[in-house]
Amino acid sequence: MLTSQLPSRVEPYKLAARRERLEGLVALDKLPRLAEEAGDQTGDCHVVLEFGVDAQGRREIRGHLQATLALPCRRCMVPLSQDVSSNFLLGMITDEALAAELPASHEPVLVENERLDLLTVIEDELILSLPQVVYHDETECYVSAEQLVSKTEGAAAESASAKNPFAVLNALKSSGALKGKK
Image (cartoon, rainbow, N blue to C red; front, side, top):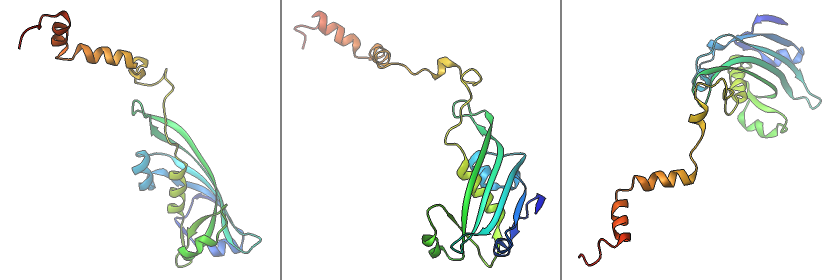
């Protein structure tokens, strides 16, 4: 079933029994937890979900999502466009205790009252797909190359000794000017 906007809630067991495929868009501005993690977003996330039953009788959802997000550069904090995508395999469970019975290849997804909140599932997968760090290329970053270079230890030690208020006393002591004074 191809839809332009994915429904927010579905009956996943019925979809799995019929081996349905949902494909559509989710507006990124409808995902508040994503906004908390990555800032306000515009545009859509393209999502493909295939519901089915595996050889062991487990109901599952095979999915793929793709979105272009505006993520802040960790150096200058100016947003840059970043493509994010994820392939995932979810195993439907009705109780959290059943999650341990799923194979390692499946991520558990809790189905309550035979209904599944698709927006929450998609938002979870998007958040899990966010890159750890995002940087502009050095030539495009709003922080200059000089600001990115850290000082060496020798330069830091020289700077520290020049600012040492006791450096003058140490120089006097070394020259012998303080001999005999008590």
